[in-house]
Image 1 (cartoon, helix red, strand yellow):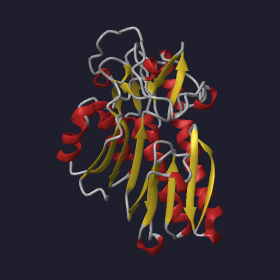
Image 2 (tube, rainbow, N blue to C red; image 1 turned 90 degrees about the horizontal axis):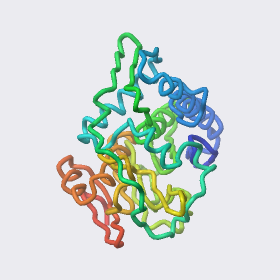
Image 3 (tube, helix red, strand yellow; image 1 turned 180 degrees about the vertical axis):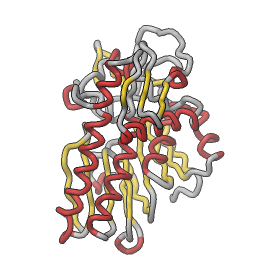
Image 4 (cartoon, rainbow, N blue to C red; image 1 turned 135 degrees about the vertical axis):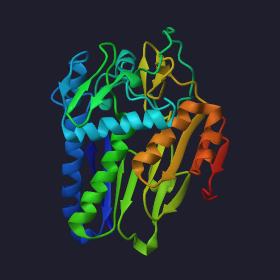
Length: 307
């Protein structure tokens, strides 16, 4: 087995496959990931998502591929009672996250998590429920005041689709990671895939806090520590409380979840960061294996998570 990595979706893509077919696997995965970027990037003026956001208030044609991604985002909102909200694009842009991640003034991962002093906003009332998606007609209409951001669902789905494409192209066991969102398909080497867990997906394997194994499905790690930027002297992170449109008050630093797919795992990990002290019971009710690290360093393992 061998790895190859490249820049994609504002993060790092990694694929692991048999060395002899690694290039075939990468080509198959890259095509899928590029398609997701063209469909759902908030930072590409030529993406379909950007066109839809610009046309907010009007009925707009939408491709079947983006219908699937938007429907996934709305389903995640329904399943998490709004903790994962696909209509936070305007709020993220207002906090300075209006361009590709590499263009922001990044905060070091080791910088302590704090609550930024930001102006209060009006209470948001589940605007995701106002999204009119007519999948059968290929039409969508957004309220004029909202924009779509599918970051909490599209990246995990991209990992699932890219991994499946690479597996079909090679017939071999394949692992795909997109910034810590991991999907696997086919037979794993020695029956299991080993995955390192850390706040930042760029952490070297030998420096990870622990390693776990999975045989199928996906594993996602979401962290408040890794994706932060400076705004007017304040360290701001990217996980927003949908009720306020502001960064969530840190309770958990990092959450990792395994599920039947990477998309499902990523939704659950993001929801847990938003839910804070309610996350433990929410994950237990759903029978999900998870690892939660508090801002105080306490580690909680649920649902059979090893260790």
